Amino acid sequence: STNRTFTMIKPDAVENGHIGAILEKITAAGFKIVAMKYTQLSLRDAQEFYGVHRERPFFGELVEFMTRGPIVSAILEKENAVEDFRALIGATNPADAAEGTIRKMFATSIGENAVHGSDSDENAAIEGAFHFSGREIY
Ligand code: CMP
Image (cartoon, rainbow, N blue to C red; front, side, top):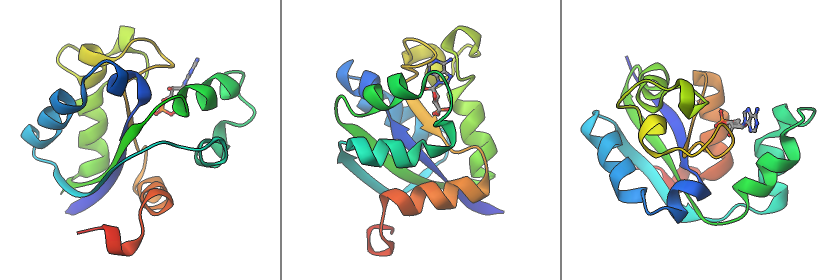
């Protein structure tokens, strides 16, 4: 059935000029954009958004990276959205990502990996609501 996932084009991909190419791949794969904004996360936003990773050794680096410049955040709709979007972006580490995936094409490293994709329907709803109010979703 049709459902939603949440994504961010991360600061590395924005800095490297890949917003347009990434959005093109997303829409060409059949995802409909139902919400989108260009924004920059505050330190508190990033710490809260990535709260599940608080105890990880890379947490500080992750928060610093995600706040260093603007991002594009979006809610996407499609049949089987969460799973299909994760297939489109590829493995977390671009070195392991399949040919033709967004991370293979545009990511720099495991930390600076170009895009985020929700890992479950539950997290897609939580992450979408963190970034967008009901009135910003069309
Ligand atoms: P994402 O899956 O979108 O959300 C968690 C992020 O943590 C992940 O992308 C990576 O950007 C980052 N991350 C995961 N593992 C590492 C790691 N070993 N070193 C640095 N960053 C990491």
